[in-house]
Length: 219
Image (cartoon, rainbow, N blue to C red; front, top):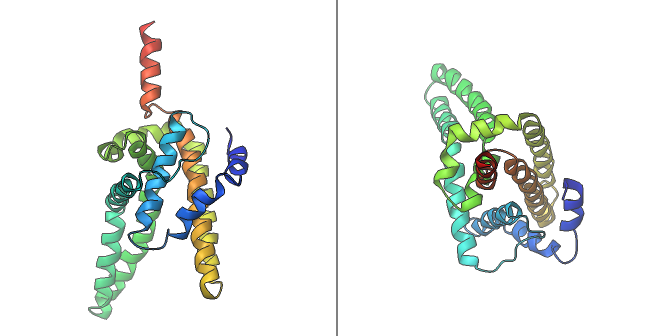
């Protein structure tokens, strides 16, 4: 299934409430672990070739996967977070240190952009077998990205643009903007999950691809 048919598919009345439920709680601390875990479950379903979106059964497992994914994100964003925190600290000391602090803060934004670039495949690597260690195999993830670099980069930039638009929506007054931004952000991430999962399957990072290559090599 290609991207646009998948979008039409997810807007079907049979499935639409599944991702809306995840979107509503996306901005709510602790509960949003369910949202993250559901994305991992959706990615795993796509990898085995199933059509559709997963149900919300086994909520405790979904929640735990969300917690694990949070740690993956934290590890990948550790350097940007450190640069931002240390830079902010320097801005509070004196006018001299503030100069360097502002530089570090700007560098942290660049670092955030760069390190976030690897997260889609780190997420897919984790989701495939629910294996925390696979998401941290940095060298393998880089090699996998190289195999599909152009579509990967294009998808990453498009996702960032749409997520930025979703962020603007939150400024709509009252809870309307908050809820609408939350749901649209989650749906964007769901579409990105589909897109990057399909790319992931095409690379040697995928366990199924590795098995298939080994079988063909043995013929």
